[in-house]
Image (cartoon, rainbow, N blue to C red; front, side, top):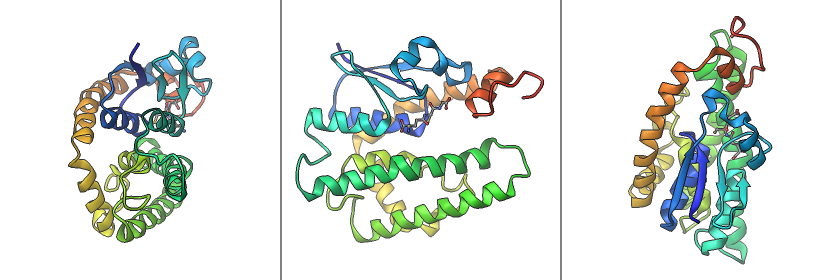
Length: 234
Ligand SMILES: N[C@@H](CCC(=O)N[C@@H](CS)C(=O)NCC(=O)O)C(=O)O
């Protein structure tokens, strides 16, 4: 059985696609339609009680949820992109954990308030934009000192963080303020595996955009974390 990746076109899924492409393993992509509440389906909940993508079904049929856990699983299984011992292992785990615990959640909130929330959210936009700028400055400073987040070598920390740096301009910040991030992105985007993953996700993204525009108001409310609501309230 080949790997089965449950996902859609979000950054947490793109990370796993890049990893699978880097490892050159076969996988089957199972689209979860978050805009028709596919994540709340009982079958999907049995794979991830947290009702979120990505989920990886291993070759042995074991479901793994949380993108950080999936990256560690794949790295250890293939003995690539995460050193198995020594201080360099913890350099990778530090930056990987920073991504899943801080970069993703904070920039995800910034995306929410700059893209989906109704107008008049100045306090929230200001809070998350300041935090976003702080995070980009942190990454930029690190990448002024070393070529990859964990040091000299490309690792799962870079794979996890790359798709989360796709939205700087859309978030009302300036790419030019983070030149070391731009150089690092260019280095990563030149990798054939990253290019294959980007090409794969482009089709999924077009489909998701269509599904989002056609979604019911209540499905959209649930996707945005606004509760069950009703058609009228959405
Ligand atoms: N900490 C999780 C976050 C996963 C996550 O937030 N997934 C989003 C897409 S990026 C999702 O499934 N959202 C659907 C929902 O919240 O209903 C991970 O890193 O895997």
